[in-house]
Image 1 (cartoon, rainbow, N blue to C red):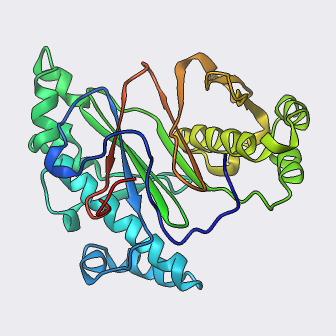
Image 2 (image 1 turned 90 degrees about the horizontal axis):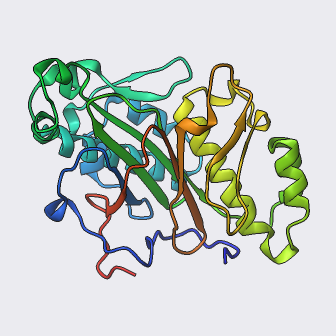
Length: 290
């Protein structure tokens, strides 16, 4: 059960076997989730990977702990993407959508760059050279306090992909927040949840909803109370309904990402139900995995 937080350290998930780059095996049509320890001190190596704009954005964060976590998350994201692309992390470039969702510079996508381990893997899936014209590395980043998650999919087409991790604070007015941000049917269900179960239920719902919104890439322009997800303890995660024009709830995959301690996570993507694999981030592997 989620408890009141002490977010000074990210210990990772307790169950899956973790590995770092040395044991990672590239695979297509899976969701690789990289777990980041953002509680470690920012290093000169982290900052050296970032552009001046990325550094400035992190430095504008007033609380030093949060500034460090933001800078480390961005550096770890670059390391992960550089690993798939077969290029130095500092040379990874981003473009941004209408609502500031980051994506790879199109010139770095496997379809354009035509080199690196990700591209070599996708070549084995392609039936014709034209299949490679849409070869894509899709990714998303989330971080909260000392925890971060990067989700990656390699495929012959782009995927709408979102991931969310939240540091659970059970001392907040969860009923009030749910009333504002949950759909009416979700809130009615949440009101019936036993008091002892409300905190984990809230963060199951919140992370699933955030993962869906991040996959859409719409920011808050599409309100969170205009769609519903399942979040009962024994219910399979899924998008039940959405008021987004032209969207079909059945096209979405939604999975929980169990986290240790005071964290909850979820991922969402369009298309087939890919397997999910979990790894420690490149500089996040603990001395002793828990």
